[in-house]
Image (cartoon, rainbow, N blue to C red; front, side, top):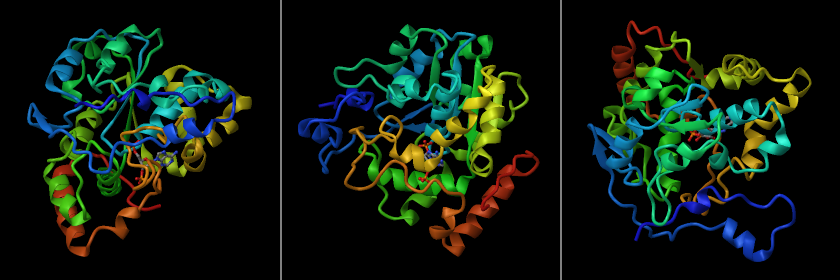
Amino acid sequence: MQPNMQNQVEEPSTKRAKTDGESKMAANTLPDDFKPPPDHYYQGIRMLAITPASTFDAIREMEVREDDIWVVTYPKAGTTWGQEVTSVIVERADLEKVKSKSLLARVPYLELGPLGQQGATYKMVEQMPSPRLIRTHLPYHLMPKQWFEKKPKTLYVARNPKDTAVSGWHFTKINHFFVTYDTFSDFFPKYLEGDVIYGSWFDHNLGFWEHRHDPNVLFVKFEDMKKDLKGQMIRIADFYGYPLPVDKIDAAVEHCTFDKMKKNPMANYSSAHFINHKKGTFHRKGEVGDWKNHFTVGQNEVFDAVYEDKMRGTGLVFDFEL
Ligand code: A3P
């Protein structure tokens, strides 16, 4: 039986205290022994079963609007952060409004589903009023055909591949829909060869990096957001054409910090049943350089050699520590 993912986008009430029953629902999670349907390969890229080939095919043909705003990332690069920042900016830092709806209701995950009784998310996206905020992990070449024609503003958030790997490995342990890798050493070779969900970090990042000068693409690094969130939020807001009201900037930036987002039920997936809440929280560390606690010296040497080879001449550089 396919689980229904509806409560992924359910919105906890902000108007009154929760009853006991509701609190238990919020902590809802799939059974510990839940076995995800097997991954599949779409055009050679490993994908979760919760995004079938028919959904990717349909998204290629979907309607795109010029005034859409797209948030694109390789998984674990700061998607949620980019979504929240985008939502705050487009709502002109009206934080009460932002906090009245769950993140996935504000910025839906395009390629999810269909699941159980719930239709595919892209169909729901088609009905949304403009301006639509859309989150996706699609690689450049699988973006909808109309995305290339309508050229909506698109934020690409990139994170250094070592921290992305570590974050991704941890996520396999708390997300019911992922194949779990018990140790980082089990995950590392799969990541290196790109046999992970959404494929190779290198292909995905370089696919968008090559288009960083396109007027509708803004390439932002996770590490730069860590160094100067305010500066990056102003940059993103100006790019979208929704400049942040000066008197609200500081509150908007504070709202998007790791500590605030970790505690925000509308942005922390604390009621999402795709996460095994007994095993961890979605907001884990949010740091630059945690890879040093996981990579062995040998793995680091192997990774550096591949990195040097694939990144040579691209001009794309990352901070691996701050
Ligand atoms: P860690 O696992 O290293 O903590 P995604 O949203 O693409 O799945 O990425 C999740 C990663 O982004 C997690 O990294 C998470 O903690 C981090 N993250 C989410 N919100 C953040 C924020 N406001 N500041 C810094 N990191 C954040």
